[in-house]
Image (cartoon, rainbow, N blue to C red; front, side):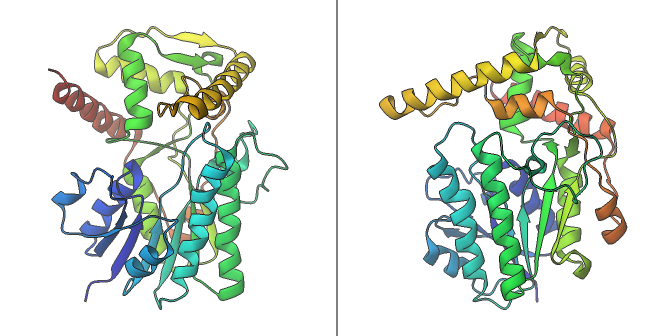
Length: 339
């Protein structure tokens, strides 16, 4: 009998690829879906849908019935939402899912976190032993840390078999919010680099991340552990964007902004955006956020020795192949959107 997996955030970039990977491994997949979500891609697969969200405890209980695994990938990724909006999903929603999980005799709870919980310290070779920073620079990263603490609390108190995955900068096909925006900026000549793009981008190709997540879910050595996941290459943002532009046949023409100035502008735009959003109900994000500046302006250099030694993990897709697949997706997307 196939083991059943409950996946949150399945309409998003990472979790949609996770669904693909789980199906390829022979798992039965059940996805938590909000009623207004676009499920056109997911409908192509033989999967179950449970309608609800992380704030609806009963929908979580229903969705988890008979499941062996939980892959919690959903989250409120924002630097301009209010702290209550972000915490309700990222922290309280995670707690709801953990509580519902206690009622099921399943195997594993996998929580998708982020290397942002280390706090953009500009340090190199950051390992899982790095403590949380005393103060976070934005609410998203703070709530991801709080959610991690909830996950580990349930492991310690209730012996819930959990694993936390901390990916770095994930890229690849279907990355609308990161690669899609970067490619649009390149093609429109509006690409902005921070400190000339010298910082390590901390790239993690999507297929490598999915391999790591599934590997961790099947290993007892991963229970109660946190793992960094990033590719072995050290590619700067300038190199990555140059390579994207070159393979897209676009000019390598970018604007540059010093880190400190970019942070200040990001803060001003976020603050003004929140006020306008409260008054008008605006849904589009601010043009520049501190979160984006932190990621592109500080070293994203993470040690992956732990997942390699404990789980035998090795990236399957190299940088050249990952870049080619990403560019092919961008070109197809451009053709599909051409009138």
